[in-house]
Length: 200
Image (spheres, rainbow, N blue to C red):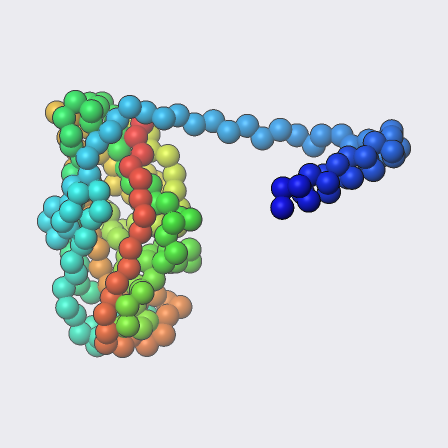
């Protein structure tokens, strides 16, 4: 396989060289990537209706399908927290917020910003809400957190600044009948997102 690829590339280069200056191509620009890896290595633990460390499970209550028949309706509000800790490795003064790894979250609904259901219930999604303002978090949008912020305006993600080597991010999860969804039927609701914690 590699050998065949090398021959194809060599042939293409030879052909381009033979054409000479008649087909010279100018560069259109440069793309530069900037980033930073930080030393903050907090342990993430779920509390409230969430449990686990790193891999978190949030348990929503059983609700009737009839409570979700109206488009845009919600039910089963469930509060939970992500607590950052881990001693001095969780650096004081850093502000943290959730970053959704979209390419690793196939259930992400880029229209609603909620999570599609992989269970057997139809017409329902799960969305996350910032309890500080009661508004939905748009999980389909990522935006960098600024130092000392309490939320990110672009997506309504909660943010918290680490003090005493700990911080708490508060959330609310709920069932959601999206405006584009079909009728809600009874069944299981199972969904997930893959996340990283971002710091500034």
